[in-house]
Image 1 (tube, rainbow, N blue to C red):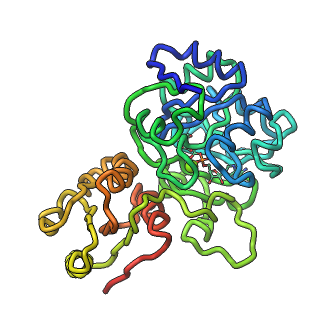
Image 2 (image 1 turned 90 degrees about the vertical axis):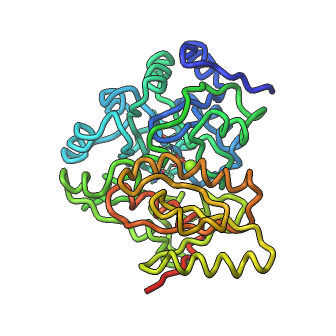
Length: 341
Ligand code: TXA
Ligand code: MG
């Protein structure tokens, strides 16, 4: 199969593919999604095959409006309705009770379903034109960094999917925040564009320990996606945190270079001067965390294009969007983190 590249005005064509049971990648405000008709179990199954995604990792259903969401799920708590009002359209996914309208394969057999209303004109037009909810994980091969451009989608999935709608680069660059609204208090399962602080201003939300990689051995994670290594480039990622991170990155980098390894350093733009002797990947400014989130996955892919063997990353403070950024970096590092003084 040759993957067709569609432009921003081709949403009707893309919607026809979706209605015909085909897979179409499309931009959202977070990352590109790989969409299929959420009501068609066979189309949804082909998402797992195209991505090489484990069968037990459930998908997010994308809708054009809150009303469409409410037509697909069971009873919704009033405080979950408040979250919808505050954050939709936008980078927040809510886990709600599933009804039999949604095929079990979408939720990997769970009795809940994750839903969101994306804030991207192309995504909205696609869903409206299809007249269907669209199930979509991030449009990467399983285990690779999520795609923030149509080119990233093609790098991973060219020939495996019907089409990609090219809408340029995505704005947030990290995936949506996932909140489980079927338990009390609500649980943050994945940090993302909607910050914990913003959520807590609306209702009580606790952070699931799985967010920090603290899964009890043998226990079943609430968000199955959390147990997989993810977001990983081929280079070994070492995340360096703490006040003397700069000095430690330089000494670690020199040691690795002396062993003949190809080393890159990814750091906030303000701190790049420290690392002149290495290949540097500028993350964006600490004053504008969305610059950092928007460039994160592109830089992880770039590390591969540069043939880096080791990528040393300077950690940032975990407030606001910093929580999502650090969560992705920890997972890219396989939770191997250098903690300093
Ligand atoms: O921003 C995003 O959310 C992007 C764009 C395309 O919308 N999508 C995305 O999908 O990141 P994916 O499949 O890569 O991540 C979905 C996450 C996984 O961690 C999955 O385990 C979790 O949501 N999830 C989905 N359904 C769930 C459910 N019923 N209960 C708990 N977690 C669920
Ligand atoms: Mg993903």
